[in-house]
Image (spheres, rainbow, N blue to C red):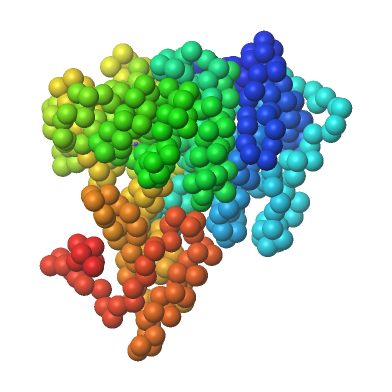
Length: 515
Ligand code: AMP
């Protein structure tokens, strides 16, 4: 078991050997070197050590900036797990997350609205921008203080089925084990590469590039929110980045592929596409191979509960020639994938579908302060080599083929992926049903060309006004937008008189999906 923090130790090595290496770049900021990133992390650590007497997790609030990353490192250096929270979330949601964290402390890398300050406990916001004092060096905490071993490295909040976001606690060991595996990937292992940093830091996909780049002396090139809404800006940023390792969901690549300008001319240094988070489709890979003939396209799979990804598989002509959904690759060393029958709980033979169980040394501790939910999904396990590890029941349906390659076949429950975002439909329904006048709500995914492309909500209201359905629906949408992240707000809300029921007396979701 590691008694240091493997990621911090790697970053410190780069700081020592090549302090002027670029570590981070985002539009609006210059390049941040490893030495600068580390110096700011030390200021953060120093401030946290002076201010706190415990090791409670610290919320790091903001968007893409070098300050976010140095704040993560500073938390780890001072023995605190970090909780990355996107400042673009509705205030009530940020507050909901903050209220779940013991001794709430928010390290803000951006302005914080008065509304949020009012909701948070008094004096619980620390401005990360003010921590670095020009010309002053902060002492570096002793390595024994660093987050290490089975201590929590980060907590990532995802949509929760019970109507509240839930935190997943990932340990330093998990990240170290994931890091060692990732450093064996082609291209990444050469070191010093430029990684696209697109996923918000509140999603574990972003850990892919954070860990991949920072542990190999690479540079993160962050994509701004502005660019996400404007092809012109986005492509200007991609062109400027010199990106070599592209990390994103397939949806983001699809979004870029819509524009003919997205190709090798724009990103001539691109060597690898690293996908995770949702199904990768043939059409996406075929288009990428045409536009970037020299780049490797790799599909990887894994839930936040087992630290970013646990399988890796390159997609070449052989995989493309097979019309069945693309495989997600083979499990990393240190992880076993078991396919289990939902009926009997027994492992099924190769080729047969069942629930994917992940057993290995990157499985998270569990859900933050939620032993009941943790017990439902996590378990103690023993690997074939006798090692004691954690196991996680993913809720994903899949099978292992005769070569031991994993294939995913969708979910066994009502959580869905929309543009790579993990959404519990039950959370949206719960939020709707807490609104005044809403008697009952059901949310269904709407598909186009075999892919989920939006959400539709159906609601039954107390005191529905005849002829006012449109206004009522718009009002509900506006209320939802104040409570949920934008990607969770259904594009359409339909007011209906009563929910259709199936033969079992349950809401007939199939009928609702048909529209
Ligand atoms: P997240 O925790 O947001 O990373 O979401 C994890 C879930 O995304 C998994 O449990 C799967 O349902 C889905 N997922 C992740 N990677 C893939 C993939 N390569 N192919 C299909 N589904 C995936």
